[in-house]
Image 1: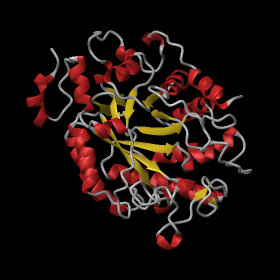
Image 2 (image 1 turned 90 degrees about the vertical axis):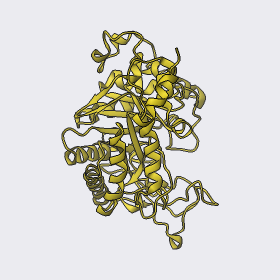
Image 3 (image 1 turned 90 degrees about the horizontal axis):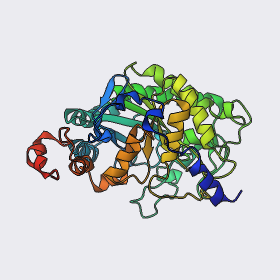
Image 4 (image 1 turned 120 degrees about the vertical axis):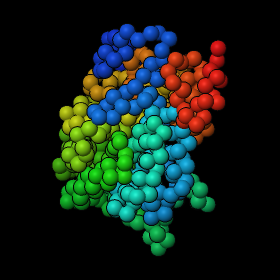
Length: 399
């Protein structure tokens, strides 16, 4: 099948609209609400955590750490969005091992010493009404790269300049530069699962209320799932059941490490956008298995397993995947990707296509996006902005 036709077919899968009442998961909480009350500002309850609205900041790398430590930049980054009214703030992909970072300047949580600096961030976020979340990650074959601020962005960091040996399910490069990755042994795979679980415990100690596992975008978790990246012939490769083994074992270990009332998210690349790769049907099946392991929400992204994908990027282009997983796997989902306008986000929630809206770059441009949405909707809810600003900005709502 032609790649473009394949991509169009993937987007079209499962997008037929039905009434909100027939959407399935968690719809009863929406029933009977006044039509003029924005769904975007209804709370979302997940285990023992309640988000004040359905607006979340997606994890975004800041490339501002040294030795994995958070600093004043991370505090400022999260503080602005907490003041601006978002319900959930997800910290960037945070390395569960030093070799799991994308770049030497990525955030880490592989040692107890990282906890106090992160606690400064989460304390401020909570004080201003948002829930702090963290994305735990291992970059795998995409690790040991220079960040975008370096003179040679995305180039491999040589070993003698502070780089490290990338690892993956197979000894297969993602790019042509750098060393051939080390193929993980079964014992090494299980040790990384243990690193995720230990990082989850540190995350709770650091004050995070939500933990997300990063199994998307060609990083280590996704590289086990995708047939395009995983050529193993043992228990961690080949069949679907083998390729999801690392995912399920890690989710199980992290769920055991977390308090019962702490929600667990998983970010998936719901399709590789290439025929022969990971598909939306695979994602639905994996999401059903993750729900059985105690995962509470699937954060639905796409792509990253290959540089050859032809992705039809545009507004809402990934929303159909969140909708299909929500409907067919019976689990809450988050929609992400070129969601920029309040009416656009409101429609996704109101139509039952996802339970949560995650925005990345739009929150960089507009930290107080939630307040703009409140103004545009003329919502009767309290203004989603810090009380120190609310007294002056409440009257900005359009009459």
